[in-house]
Image (tube, rainbow, N blue to C red; front, side, top):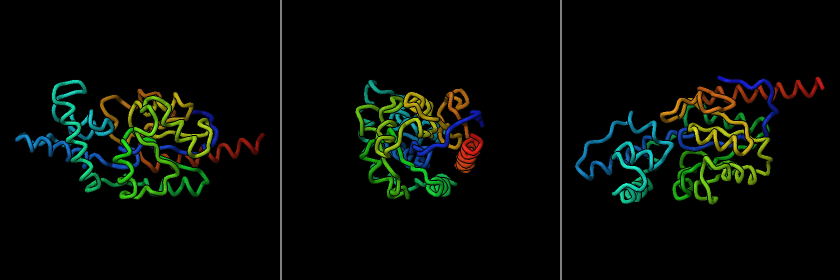
Length: 235
């Protein structure tokens, strides 16, 4: 865990969705393996698919079929994967252990929290209530603004919807582009080691914090809040 020496207490915490708040990889992987089965191909091992989950269709289709955007056949697979995933998105998906307690602790501390994801609203809108996140202060999907992460626009929109200056927000995610977006938005950034994280080592992302569990994040927030209070009393 990396710790900045002094930080102001945050007023809001914004979260990525897949791989940060929710373990959605089982359903994402099942959808792409359904495409393989339909084509007479064996399933791709889950251990291969899971690290790509934060990259959505691009990651799943790349891992399962070796195709990238622009390749022949990619777009057809992407559209079919979308349709299959929409039908089965909440079969095995659930919140990571400790997330419910983390969100309750944030609320009890008087902070707001919200979701900023690259997942299209087609999926976020029906999924979020099914996995127990309908009390989010805001939900910004991948197609809410004209940009997706690592562009800062979605994070800035989340802060705007919460009515809180971006400099008083933290952004938490499990992908390098989450940290890049947070830095560009002027937010404190948290890389979560409990997520999918992809092929790039999280310690190299340049996040303000690198944490192993949602419980670690809650404890860190409490420590920062207490340190800010002590600094105010000493001023």
